[in-house]
Length: 135
Image (cartoon, rainbow, N blue to C red; front, side, top):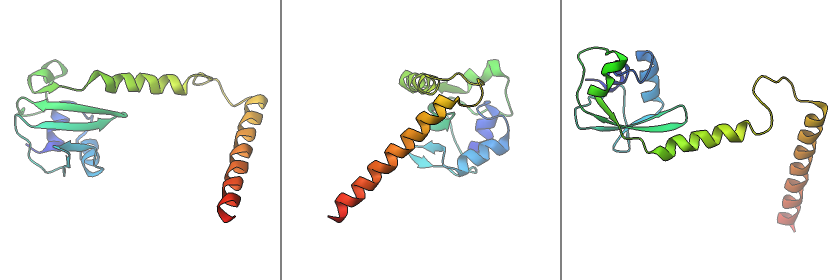
């Protein structure tokens, strides 16, 4: 079965065209080899799929005849993704939400000044590094 069709059948992607695009972008691998959407996969193969900033590792148990229901997915794949991958995603969420919650609106005047100061300091540091290189 084609890898793009397989990933669609086991509900890893919502549509087959999304699965095809993921393959073309190099987000689907077999033994660290980027797969084309038309590559055939067989039971026993181990796929690595990058989706939502997580590198999923899947072991193919069997190939379905057509798209399967969500409850039957476990008959066809075994998810061997390490728990560290999901922990990294949690850390990433916390690092983004440390100051401002999503949907709280535009930056305040204080936020804007802090951003401007940060950019100004970064520009000064960059200019100092360039002047040191020329000396």
